[in-house]
Image (cartoon, rainbow, N blue to C red):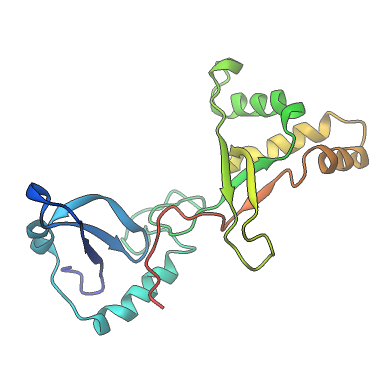
Amino acid sequence: NRDINSFMLVLRKETVGQGKNRYIRVMPGTGHHYNDEHITDIRKIWSKSTADKAKDAWKRTYDYAEKNCGHAASNLSCPGARCTFKKRMKSYWIVTGLVLPFWDVMKNVWRSEKDSSLSFDQIKVKVVRVQCADKSDGTKGKRIVGILVPENMVRGIKEKIEKGVPNADHAMNLTERIVRDPFFKVTRTFETRTCVNPR
């Protein structure tokens, strides 16, 4: 690129006919791009480099993008700590276990946070299934099914559940018994892109 510190990998698509010379871009921070490009368009902006020149810059960007957004590196203003722009890893909050007893609680919090005019039927709740890939805590391969919850709603849902029971001890027992790991913060369950590991 014209920015001498910027590198990417291009992978040729296995296509025929008019699809020849189409390439997928792979960036060290964000991984594969969805759209393919013709090689002539790529060459207008990018120039070929050697692996030795690209390796250090690639590794720096790859490591940086795990916990940092891309605004600082691009001299752009950042909306805040929850920004995920050009981040390689993202955190997701999942309420898991037997959540049916708390369904109305979650929808109430959802409605108050998003739009109080929404009816229960209009609130779209997303059920997800993920598989843990992290080796460090012994959960590798564990499958989790639950409801994807925006981070800003987790505290409200937890407080509402705890208010609906007689005392704090009972609240703890209830959440442990009915909703096992009720606020399982998944930080390494899955990545938004498949990145090329420079190591």
